Length: 367
Image (cartoon, rainbow, N blue to C red; front, top):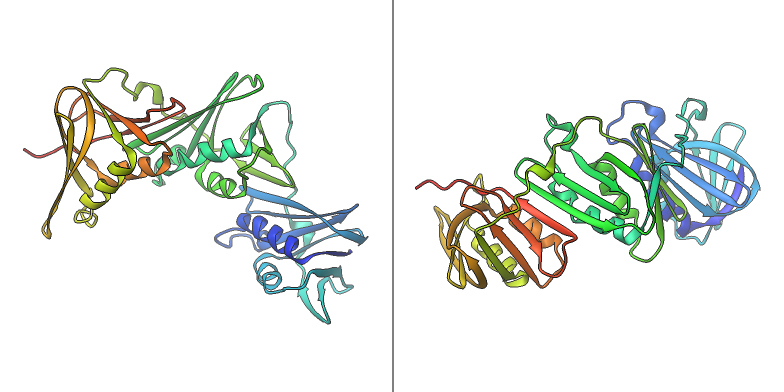
């Protein structure tokens, strides 16, 4: 194998595939990045056997071939190079020679025969969506996924396809996030749970423009194809919670509030309670004001924010972080908060769209 490629493109590609290197060493061969030179393309690939990333870049291929290099040291080495052109070649002693400017380095390669093959998938079952829209639904929901190892099925987001609609749901037992996107093509019906780690890394790879991402599912595997980048992940197995039964539809207190003012007031009011177990703040909703109070042994902070109120007055308490996380994910000027009672879930939605909503359970107040 021998090739010449752009150093910056190579460094960027290595940075992307390195996300799939294992966090803990179980099988040493998985610490490698596979390099394939074929045609006019250099392909980099890494996997931890559950999650994988492949990246393709243009290169001048002098001699085709395939090698497996130690991933992290290769990544660190290439990142330190500033040369525009880098030559990679395989030597007789199963080493990778890296030439740049008037310098060169050598890395001992790993045994590529022990490296797992790439997953092959049937591309009949799947859907297409703008990369920017996929990134948006991930960012609007992923923070609500559980981190509890005893509830593995909740350590990811539910992706549901119903013909022309994608619905993404995440919940952890205390809060729920739901986002919807319309699909341009009829995509059948599908329901899968994608692990949080895969979605977190995928969101970093997705662009903000009008490029298309193609998602395919077969058995317990998901493959996401983007321009020059492919991500695959094992899916979580199990029955997801019936989230529709959790979301209330009738309310007795309806509030409209300026998101920026609400977010700032909540941040200040929760300052004293951030070290407390529940990070508790109390809401007193009355007339056209919500009074947000935070208390601790250090003192108390009381914030008043103007609202538009329909329905009954209400006193209710929340973990401030759960409310703040929802507001941070929203990009609207005004939000709606709908309540039933001081012990029932609160529903938070934007005023301008019905594409997403958040549910937060209150904290019971001691009289």
